[in-house]
Structure formats: C-alpha cells, structure tokens
Image 1 (cartoon, rainbow, N blue to C red):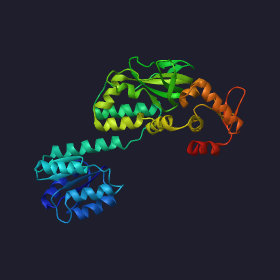
Image 2: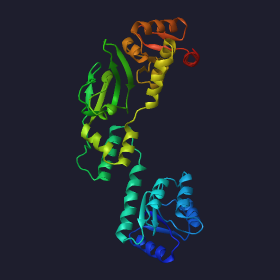
Image 3: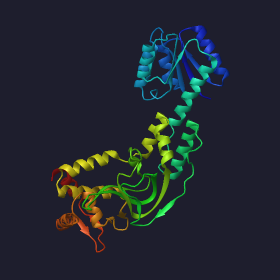
Image 4: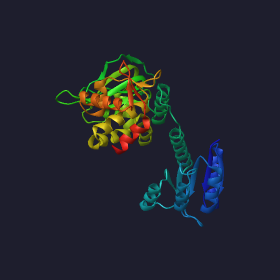
Length: 356
C-alpha cells in the first residue's frame, strides 16, 4: 500500500482529503503544520507528500527546502496544495523542485490523478536497468508503458560480426543505435589523407552511434569497425528519437543508460593536444589494460594491431612502434612473438603519464 503524507493546517480540508485518499486505497499520515510534517516525513519516508503552502511554524516552501537537503527525502514526489493562485507562487514552488501544484478547491479526480501521475513517474525513475540486452528491453518496455506508446520495439535480434567487418561508415545515413553484447569495436575518423584517428574502443555493455543520431544531418560522424568478433543489437532510429524527445524524464533516464564515458573522451582530447608522444603511448597502454577488452587473459597481454594502436595514440604507426621499442628497452613492457604487449612496470608507466 502506497504511503501518502498530507501536511495541511486546515482541519476540515485535512480530514476530508485524508478520507478521499484512504477510500482510494492509500495509507495516509497527516500533519497539522510544516514542522510536524518534516518530522513525520523523515521518519515515515512516504511515497508522496501533499503539502499546503500557507501554514504556521513552517510554510510549504520551507518544508520542501528542508526535505530537499535530506538525501532520504529529497527524491520523494512533492505536490503543493494551496488556495493561492498567483503565478509567482506557482513558479517559486516549481523552481524549488515541486512535482505538481493543486489549487483549492480541487476535485477528487484532480487529487487522485495528480498523485497517481507522480507515483507512476517516481516508480519508473527509481528503477535500475542493467547494461544487457535484457536490461535495455526492460527499459523500453517500461518506457512504452510510461509514455503509453505501442510502436517501440521490445524484442531485438542479435547480429554477429567478424573481425574487420564494418558496422557503419562515416557519412552514411545513421539508421540505428548499436548495443554491444560481446566483442570489441573501434570507432574512428579518417583524414583527407586517409589517416585514421581512433576515437574510442568499446566492449560489452557499451553503445555506439548515439551522437550521430542526434545530428541535424542524421549521418554517422565516424566509422565503426570490429576488432574482435562481436554480437550487436540494433535499436531503430525512430525508437531512439522517441525515447530522446517524447518526455524529459524518459529522456534523462535513457541518456544515462546509453552514455559511455564522455569524461574519458574529453581527457583523451586534452591528452592529444598537450601531452608528448611518450606520455600518450604510456597512457594508451594503461587505458587498454584498464579496459581489458583487448587483453589476452592467459598472459595478461594487450593484443592490438599496431596501426590501431597508433590511431589511439594519434600518431604515425612508425612513431608509436619506435616508442614501444623504447619502452621495451627500458624494461617497462615486453612484446611477445605474436605482438602482444605485457606491461611489466605499471607504476613507472603511471609516472610517465604524470611527469614526463
């Protein structure tokens, strides 16, 4: 049974509103002023709070401010209940983070609809979805119910790619968002002279193609190729656009689900601009080791083509090979007969990134 806290100083309004909520199947706690309401909220942790604005002890605005500072109560849906109709009060309440606003006198249906709407939103937003195809499917199923849409895809068919296969090409029409169930994919941009710059390496649980779907041209802004046999799932462009633009709450949830580490991308760009080749090679090796998507578990070695490694570093293949040779001579790495790179002195490599 969902718990509702009703904070209202007018006894008649408080009792009548509580009766309506109890008849609708809610468990109701009441408070006759803001100070008592705050204490009950912190102890009860209700599913939704309905609160008057003009009250003794603490007004509704102060109640909301106090509860918003408490991590346990900050996310509880909050509905203002007041006889005041001035726009300035409505704007103030919403700016403070209120979820809805009911003006007295209100009908029974208006009250119940407001509460049901807030609870539906809260239930959806507090759910966690795994970075698996089952988690993605569950999210889209929940989003479909939340948005009352039927056309969103809920079942996806896996597509298997082999090493060196092209998933999409820079400049081609962006038709899909791709979810990686297994394998390793590199994204890259190609210069006018044909030189590749690797923009990212992605593995299980990652998405690719999302930024391309947001461009005005709706064309892929980079290419994607398979480095290690992969299984991918395609989310159609129409579904992506619907989830992004139909509703702010769904959009925020969806963006957090499909966003890879953008901070890492920013750091890489800064690294490219200011770090020496020695630093960039050391950082690339450490990053690859940390990601572990190209690691040979048998010898803990990094298995990557030299041209791909150069693309990550942002330098010519010959230059990156020379620096790898220097690292080998310094005892920082070993390079096996098959080309696999094993880091021998991780601390020294980290010092190079910081100080060299």
